[in-house]
Image (cartoon, rainbow, N blue to C red; front, side, top):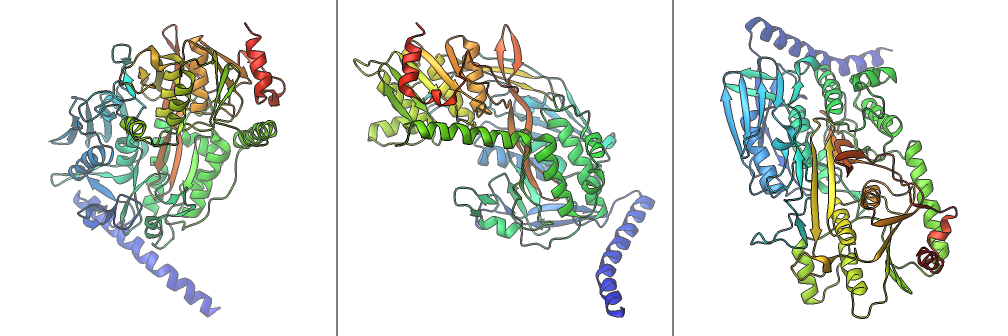
Length: 585
């Protein structure tokens, strides 16, 4: 009994001493009106290997003895933002000016749009969030296509953004009330400090990264930094990240992390209204997870977050990626909600039906009489636009969606081609790369409109794209199959971009959809982190839409086919499908 008591005492004494020191420093700060602020510098990993680091260690600041809740001075953060946007994201036109004005700090982009940090009333103010955050090369306010589409001379390659046909409706001013959410910014001795995770959530998310801290170093994190899905193993930098003592969150970190998580999800989760979520603070209380999410146990908090994502959001784009370093390196449990299970069941059903009709293997490009079939299960664009021109000149074979469409276009438009019908088989397509999806739309339609709405600000954008699929450096009617009879095979498996493309094709009134109602999925994926280093993703505020009669319509519930197919195996009997299509005219 005495031994057990001594063991408990030995474990609790350092914790009690730390809490007493923090309490003393907080009391001193309250009596003097000044915080105790300690600066420490740390290595900063920006890639998957131990060699991928910033040249200099990055400074963090710790307030009133709390060592697991880092703050960043805004001048340092502005330098990091510039580096991430120019060197990492490749935005050579990006500019950022910082102006310290008494109790305000203003970040101003090269386009004149600003983000103001108000340290008196403790809030952030974006004049226009999208205008402040977007890439300087974007054609529209919310341009989700990452491919620049230009060569070294600024001439368009493969992808052309039609600036005259594209348009924007700017959003409302965004006020992020940190004080009302229990989050404190600190201005002291001419310096301005903001919690690292707050800066992550509100200034870095559109660059698809977050910065996590494990007590030893900083890491530029996304959903594949720690785990290499191609190799099926954890990365070198993951082992460095998890080489830190697992344990509890301090009271200060637990409280801040909960408040910040609620605020970030309230701002950026794109499906709040359809999930009937008035606020995430209310949701967490309603399902009984508020205490564990705000408690000291990091593993319990992570498991609660995973359960919320899997079962209460269950929107397929929202995914729990990696545990916090405080929870340790643990395999992600295979638990899925109803929507995810349904998608898996549908995909198995349609895959088996396709394989049964094609026992010798199905072809991505196939001609049956006067009909060409193009089949792929994921939108992928692996190369920059100019690479496809070079590959053609050198006789290389590239493998991705764009290369497949280039091949199909060459076959369909060859001299004396018999092809009258073109069928795009997306019946097993669960989405993927937006760039590839837009290029496929341009191939089918000529002019490919792509509309997006920001649910957080009300901003709306429609960008129009064209593609050069005969690789002659001209963007004209010779690059499309719009003069053919066009069809698209769809099913409940069609999700995300696999849903967006059929929606745009149907709205065009130029393409006939055959199959069953698509699976939905309208929001883009947004990687996120917690203040204690968990990595996850959500359906973001940017929602893909289609434009009709000047109005934006959501596609989250999927799109109905023009011709319903009772027996799904009929989708894959190419001979019967060709006869059916020819019988429609």
